[in-house]
Image (cartoon, rainbow, N blue to C red):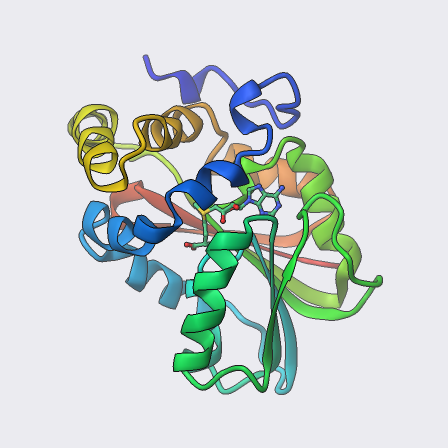
Length: 247
Ligand SMILES: C[S@@+](CC[C@H](N)C(=O)[O-])C[C@H]1O[C@@H](n2cnc3c(N)ncnc32)[C@H](O)[C@@H]1O
């Protein structure tokens, strides 16, 4: 029995592994993008493009990407969509964002994007300012997920969308069993060799396996005010996109 089926906690303040987890990301920042491509067999690129499909219809949108890291989702949003007027990225990991800023410069996106240091549980934007707020592989890192979701809701304009991309687990038992062998043993091994950090990629599978997904996660979004909830399962359930709107 996998742990994810037993546990649906959203207040993880008693979990030492999530406290100041951004420091861990800063430590592996130089290898972060490479490992994403390698360990997901390049699927992460496609998953971020899938997020873009869920933006609302309006033009000239203001978008905030939380846990922006090295800015991959922000870049994908700005390059793949013609609806974005301004894109902001927020993350407490300074070294991840330094790499992100260099990438934004190379992609010629500095005139309409900005990366700012900050915490997704205390977002430095006013109420009702964003048309969309996104977060890719970040919601799971928050100490208090409810607080993060309430913050996302607060800064969205009425009708604005929250689009959340997060790892999940395949529903099919055989696929899940096979995936878990890769996820628990092979991925942390490759991750530790290439990043030089033994802990980082063990953290990944432990947090994914204990984080609510599917309908359990949609219920948490609903509890925090979101309406018109939808989810889209990606790559046999290895990742899921959750979409909710502000009333
Ligand atoms: C797995 S990375 C995801 C980066 C990026 N979104 C992507 O798609 O590659 C998780 C990111 O969450 C950030 N993070 C951790 N705690 C955070 C918090 N409380 N608020 C905002 N970001 C946080 C980390 O610094 C890290 O950059």
